[in-house]
Length: 137
Image 1 (spheres, one colour):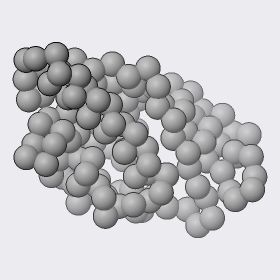
Image 2: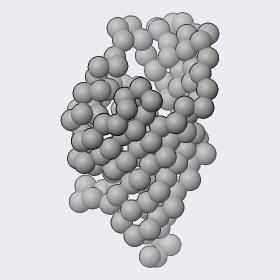
Image 3: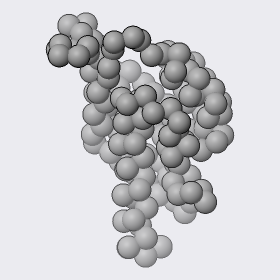
Image 4: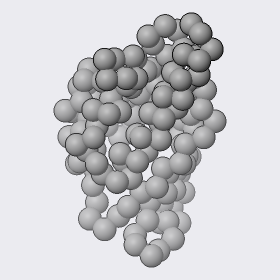
């Protein structure tokens, strides 16, 4: 793999984390296919094991709370590319707030993901979410 291809793949995989965060924060469920592979599997303490993009989107819709917003920030991304598949992980801080108010709930978590190259570009095929801490403000 050329250095240019490696860097382009790494940037696209890193962008998946940002697109995932914005998908959650802006509740743009119709854009889930720009982040997830159709056969995605998501493992989280809140949702258990969800298989398939429709189940994942359904769960995210179900989590909406009237008047509550979220802001996800993702850092410390690590990406290990092996051909058309990559292991990627990052830390995430999540703030839940209402318009004009300071966050009322904050959490830190670690995301472990498998990304795959598809005809539409890199997509997340598996996501494992492991909470590290929470704080009610």
